[in-house]
Amino acid sequence: MDDANLTILGDGSQSKSYIHVSDVITAVLMAAQLSDVPFSTYNVATGDYITVSEIAQLAIAATGRTAERVRIHYTGGDRGCVGTFQSCDSTPTASVILDGRTC
Image 1 (cartoon, rainbow, N blue to C red):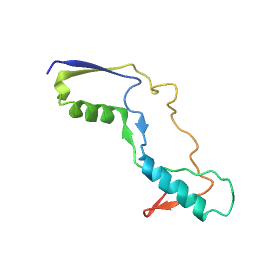
Image 2: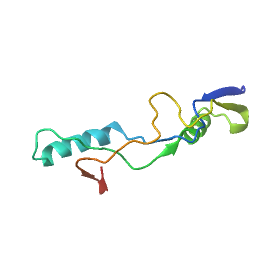
Image 3: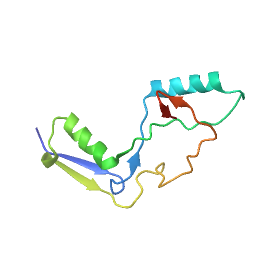
């Protein structure tokens, strides 16, 4: 397999939280069923995070390449793309328990 180049915006230390769409749907339906107000704000999340560098290593492995065969270039800085924030207020106005986890 040929060598490859991979460019990562930022320094790779940015963390991302991912959630499966079916978990979001379950949380929305549960919130609608349990809420006594017609409109509210909810923070639906897993609480798990993965760094951009870890995501890159998973992508490299998924393509069958080894880390030695891929040249990773970091653009630098503590921020990746325009939509990446260092931190934000994620305090929910209400919480929902989903499979024993607060969402």
